[in-house]
Length: 279
Image 1 (tube, rainbow, N blue to C red):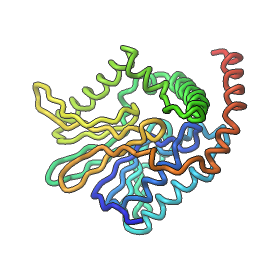
Image 2: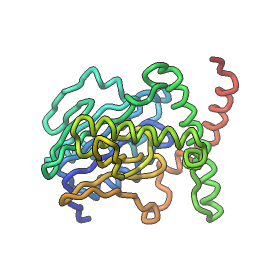
Image 3: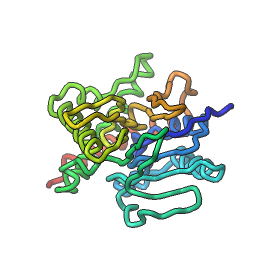
């Protein structure tokens, strides 16, 4: 397969090591591109969830592909997020074409682009990490329930449905949080003289120009590889939002079958744990 040449690609929130991670699709995308620079903008490996001891072959293939790309000349910048914050003690580590950091600034056609995950804006993470971890666990439970329902829908020949996307789009507080996040990132970028600000964290893919009384900035978010299956691509002076076409995928791989077989037992286990856990 001929690979597409791209100057810069941004991926975030893959969450390798969780049941919701769409590693097979992410691997397919990585195999289809040849970027000069690949920015992994946080929450790539979900270290919070490692206690599950779940890391199937499809997840390992993503990591193997990243190392393969680095060995062939792609500059890879791994910017830490909240779910992989354990790596922050190794900040500024360079291993050949692999670079570990918390943030990154690049000049793209004379314009300054600021890259960082975005969890610094999340008060629940900064002030009460146990609440954030509980929220992450609950989100993973929701994704697990959703995977079971989608398996049933696909068997009936119906389209997949996202519970969390529905909640984000319909609950006023969730919509306000996303808007506040975007505007805060934009305000800081404008104050610091950046032309582009690129985040992850909120799993909401976006490209939009934000203007205030101090100036304007292009705000971008790469989305995630749990529900949206999106990435940002910069080529020949322009940004575009890539959306993976699941219709072109092969039907159930062995990894998918393994997940389906486990899902019902895992769902029962998670609900039981939820009912017996006390804060």
